[in-house]
Every structure is written in C-alpha cells, then in structure tokens.
Image (tube, helix red, strand yellow):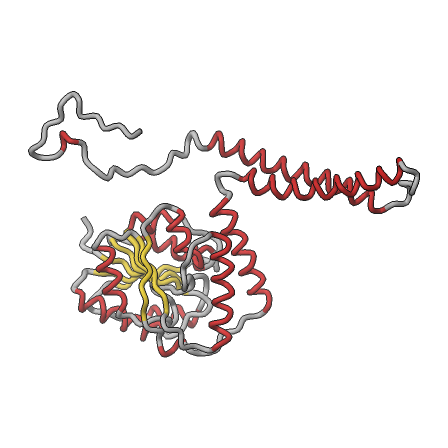
Length: 330
C-alpha cells in the first residue's frame, strides 16, 4: 500500500501565476495536519514560464511530481491525468493562481475523513471588483437554471475528493468549471465550504467576447449532459416538435389561402420556409430516436454503479441469518 495519504493536484494553465508562493502556503497547511502528501503539477502544454517556476520548486517535506502534456488540452484533461496518476486515497485540487486561503485544506480533509465524497469551496465574502462579481452571478444563475443545483463558486479550484470519486468524474473539454455539478450528477455527496478570498485575487478580470460566448455554450453543454444524456428524445423531440409545428402552421395557413382563392402559392417564399421547417423538425426528431436506440443497446453493457451500504446478516459478527431473514420493500 502506498504511504501517500493525500495527493495534491494542480493543473498549470495559461493563467498560472505565483506557483512557488502558492505551493508554500498549501505545503505549510498540510505539514500542520501531519498527513503524508505528494504534489502533482500537470502542465497543460509548453508553457515555458510556468514550467520553469514549477521545476524550481523544492520541498523537503513532500515529494513534488511534474507532468507535462505535449500540447494544450485544457484544465479538465490536466485534472483527469492528475487523478489517474495520484497515489493518495484522498485527492485535493488546488488552483494555479491565488483564489482562496490555503487554510481551508484542513477542513476539506476533515470532511472527507468524516465520509463526504466530494468537497468544494466558495470564496466568501467576495471582495473583488464589482464586474467580477456581476459576471459570476450571471454565470451561476445560468447554471442554476440549466441543472437546478445551487452551487455558488464553480470556478474556485480548491476542492477535495476521495480517489474513487475523483476518478468517477471522467473530465474532458471544459468540464472543470462544472465539477460540483458533475459530482452531484454522479450521485456523490458534495459539501460546499466557505473560505476567505485570497488577497491576490481581488483584481479586475475581464475576458474577450469570445470567452463569454464559449461559457454560454458550456452551460448549454452541461444542460444537455445533466438532463438529457439518458433521454435524448426529450430534447431533440421537443426541438423537432417545435420546428415541425411552426412549419405546419405556416403551410396550413398558405393552403387555406389557396383553397379560398385569396392567394396563389407560386412565388411564395413563405411556403418554402414552412416545408423546410417540417423537414427539419422530422430530422431533428429522428436524431433523438437514434440516440434512444443507441442508449437502449449500450445500457445493457453500461451497468450502474451499485455500492453495498449494509452488510448481509451472516457477515455481521454475533448474528445468525435464518431462513426467513429476507427484507422486502413494498
């Protein structure tokens, strides 16, 4: 069995800064807990400045492992690689830039030891620039509408998991922003802790318009994954029905006009639009049907995860299971 109890995973991306100082803060907290820990830094592509800073980290208390991806695959992939390479039974993720006070790590470990499978954090109170707080509220309002789950700081990178829970996340793309949502969707117990916002995290953060457009697409992606992954016909069928209905109404209106002699159908672009919408509605609905068929056959191989929460009577010391010890739920 590995002597490592806690693996600390840090994805090093394009916004990485202050890595050496951040490492000292988290290492000092872990040293006070007395846990045997390791640090894994996963560098997302050829980031020379961040790589040099990470490779210069020296810590006599904890081993420091550095992994580098050949090119930039994103923070979610970096986290997934870190989870797969982690040797500890508990996994802590830390951000590659100051966000929240490191002292919260001790509380995270305590919650995991108490039985929680996933622990996420929230910067509270928020003391950064007003535009930062406004765009955060809009983003979380969209996510709340999409998945009906009330998390307050999805982008805070300080989190904790059991190793099994971390591997079950199966991250890709830009899903690192929705880790609490994915964990809850997987049936894990998720606890949210409040922590003081780091003094270096108070500056104004504005992105180019393309970044905000991608965030909206990410929300739509998590909406589909959270609600319609196992029932795609509900999503595609609803869209197809809406398109087909509009097309049918347009076509019926034109047909009534033609039958009553009010107007001819020749040179009526509206007719082409009505027919196009009907055809498009049928095609979108067909996509949903194909998805249902694929899931029907795949579900026979993809069995749900089942965990035994109570041992059988014959496995409990001092008990005897008789022939009538069958529990039925009606």
